[in-house]
Length: 486
Image (cartoon, rainbow, N blue to C red; front, side, top):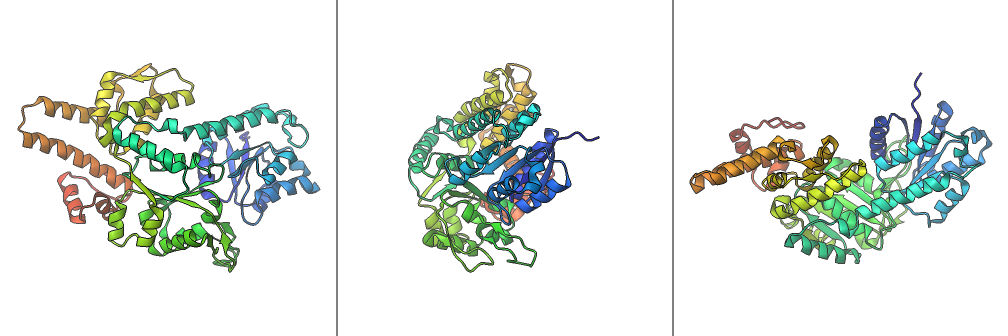
């Protein structure tokens, strides 16, 4: 007999379901997905549910309506013992949130939240396995859960504090000073930089320290969403907007109201969508698809791109009026190889974080390991460094990480550099050897991030497609769309 605990997730965001399912599977839970309140009640009537994760804002039947129906309708009395965690972009100062708390929801989590920490809270609820968990009869356990929720929110807020902006190089200190100033304004911001340089992290930091921090930070990732559905994602749509069976969906422009809309890879936006956003920024309103009634919205735009935005404007990929509206403030984040002195400080920061998360003792890098890491070119930038530190912590059973613990590509790069510097090669030969190594790894990384799309690789590298093909042939790299073979 399957004794897995069943979690019912009621949320209209597909991404939330995907990530929650991944974490639920890892923790041995069975996750059931409903995309509105009506579907949620259907599942309650069909199966045994041990816990409900309930989003507030959904079409058809939202979270507030769902919970009030659960309380008021006698036919649902048999479900009232089930713990309910409300997922919301608003804080407990909101009247509706206060009403839900007074009605007896187990606790609420304010988005964005950490999924690992969410699983810990769920595990604690299940461990109690006691009738007193019934939020409608006994709230004696709720204080502890609310304390955990407050601690979780505090941890998330701490993550995006200025103290977590790590860097000693002059370039980064100037950027950090500007970011502190930017946070106090309400201007739209454009951030450029290579993949993995931390553009979204800086955007979230700006939001978390702005006057909009208690409202939603909403993400539109243009590289992971088909261009054909961007408009409907932004504006949302009413019932029957496309076909008779189309169910209403709240758009990102409404979800981001009074908050921040972060657009990643903004240069990928279609010209039509750019004009839509110009109109929204100008008029502070939009009309959902399938509706004739305009809705007000007050958003701050923070955009990011891996391209040179001015060149994209000159090449007519960015509308001029759109570019100037989103770049009231703009700055470029240098690649990690351009701020190599920051590597040991960033590595130490990530080591501390993952040691704390895994409740491990302090783990440090040896001086030789640091030297090796400083000789690496870091094509994946900070994201690559962070992932490496997380992996090393999970695999380490020692107090120090040595050069032998580092991946082969780091050790090989370090060895090549050492060999070149210690050799008596003529300058041209030494330079050629080093550049070839860099180019090969740069190309492999770019192919992977662009999913093998040669046109996108060429545009990102700012060279023509034939140059990319010649490099692929020269370095014997075979390109296929996801994955890249080499």
